[in-house]
Structure formats: C-alpha cells, structure tokens
Length: 296
Image (tube, rainbow, N blue to C red):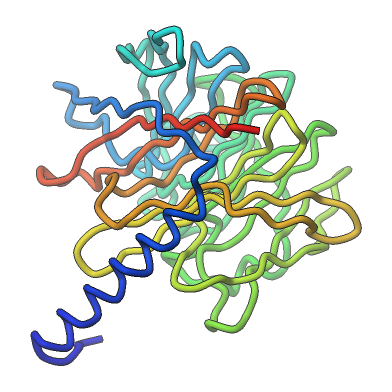
C-alpha cells in the first residue's frame, strides 16, 4: 500500500525511533555479547531462517528459506561471544521420495530438533511440517492441522519449537487483524490442537521461537519499520494458558539485520540467545549471528 508524502514519512520515522528507544530501555536485562557477520563463496549459502544450537553453544544447525540445511561450529570467547563460524555441511533439503523439493516446496522457515536428533522443519507456500530423521535424509510428512490450508501464502508457519516432552509448537507470521492474537498450535502424541493464543503487541510479527533451559517459550518477533528492522523477544510460561509474559529484548530499528531465527541455550540462571538473520540473498543485507545474554 502506498503511503503519503515525505513529511508524513519523517513523522512516522521519528515516532518509530522514539518508540523503539523507549522499548529498548525496558529490556536492560538482555546483555549484548556480540555480532558476527558471515559470508561465503557459496552463493547458495544465505537466506537463513531458522537455527538450533547445542546446549554448550558449540555447534549449530540452520535452514535456508530456499530449501537447504547446514551444520557447523562456533568458536566462542570465554564470555560466549562468537569469534568464528565454520560450516561443515550445507545441502538442499530432500522431499518425501528422497528427491529434490518441488517449485513451491522450498520455503523453509522454522526449525526444531528433538532429543533423538530428529529435525523438524516448517514451511510456507505449501504449508506443512516435515521431519528429517537425520541430516540428508528423505522427509517424513506430519499430518496438518485443518487451519493450515487457510493461512496466507507468505505468512504461514514461520516459527517452530519443541518442548522437553517432545510436543511441537508452531504459529503463523500473521494473525489476520491487529487486534487478533496469533494462534499457537501444538502437535502432541500425534494430535493437533490450538490450546494457546499469543497476544499481539504493536507492529511486531513472529518469525522464530524456541524453548529455553528454563522451560519457557521464547518468541522472536520482527518489525520492518519502512527502512530497517527492529527485533523483539518475548517469553512465556506454559500451563493451562500462556502465563507470565516477559519482554526479554527489544532492539532499535537498524541495530541488526533481518533477524529470523532464534536458539535459546545455556543454563536456567544464564540463558543465551543466539539469533540469525536472513539476508534475502541481497548484496546490501548480511547474514549475522548475534548473541545476547539474559541476566536472571
């Protein structure tokens, strides 16, 4: 949708910056550790949309929204900052027949890893969740919730997480209305339900989520302010409903690139957030690995 003239844009810009700066003050407990920009001679290595990190922060798995998966290692400083990034493998995801994905099947957005190593990936375009028993394996399809068929094409199953009991959680990027919460779906013991709804707060939209070592659900959200990206992380306790909503982090627009993936690791008293950005395969954007420490 087209907006008004330059003066209106300037007013909106200053308002957005003022709001972001105010919000930033509310997230003083999130300590910025560092940011590492990654570049590769492999033109296919980009568009990173989901990430899982080992409990010690040493290894990672990522997915690309062009239908690929990679694994690698971090070299970290004693405080947890990333010093170097090494990819060991990066390859296209396979379909259920072990062959290449179809034209509208490649938009991988969410990633979750079970305790047995199984990798679950949520997709937009052809809205679905597939399981990969191991890196490079053929996909195994999970049944779909009836709601999935009606989700918007480019705003569907954006985030995916798995809890300690092995239940999967997913939600769409858009709820359909500013006052409408985001439906949070759960796949537990082979059955889909929608037991929770995530309250919508402002302009931010969900892009990634993960369960932390404290058992809380951490939700990464993004706001494109018209010229750059702002990010927010909220966390929730899960019971009969979502409880104890906390705003863990809010960044000023332009602090980082297009953060889309989140991994939460460490110990309950010292929780690390590792975030990764989607460069959209554009020269003016970057693949960033960003670390924050939550001070409990």
